[in-house]
Length: 304
Image 1 (cartoon, rainbow, N blue to C red):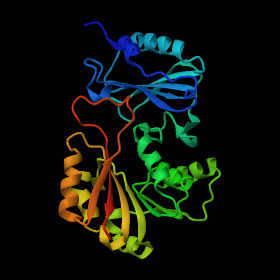
Image 2: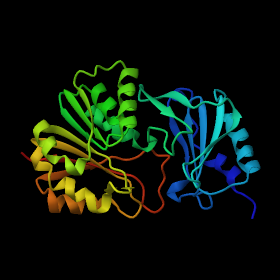
Image 3: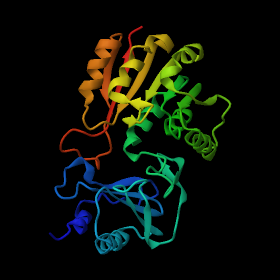
Image 4: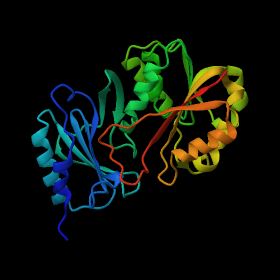
């Protein structure tokens, strides 16, 4: 069967002149909204186009796609293809320069990302609206950022005037990148903390550090030996009262295809009934989902 890869061009959400400096997803096939193209995503990480394949394609097919995409993005200096169906997600540079480290921009904030060293670049673009929500809702707040990764939420909170931020993650390299992200934005680290901790063994420490006014919880779906979010999320929710302030807000995130917003709503009702649901934060429009299995972002507020 002939490849339909070149058809992706017809569905790409190319940037306008006004937003071309901003990093963004151009095409999201993983939402199953485009039959036959479920195995591909395309990101614009100026000046790099990153094509990610979740199933094997012939090199001549993705080379044709790379050449066509370049026609729409004259500032492109490199087209790279990541093979996520292989261990560690190796990357091939198929057009232009070999660029591994770069600084991208989102909502006028800067983040360092790295290509070719791991399966993930260092910033999840589908969380753009979540970071924007944090920036708008963090003024004068004491923020707890669980599963902080490279601290994108922390950068947004600091930009929004947070009183303090505590970033918790088990990865020292991720936290180190988080410090760099703050410095990229000329943000003081005086009130920003970075702690390498296993969250599920550290509730006592969180209680001593609290209370917090805003919790951000964006866990991985599964990490062998540390996180299985279906069974582990309730462990966090049932302990909220120990380290959150009386009028605290929550931003709870979930990216597990087999789970939905109902999972979070049901577990909040069961384990944290003092918090009422406020709103669901949408993902950017390009993340079309045909089966309702995409990223979930919900906000809650504690009633005194």
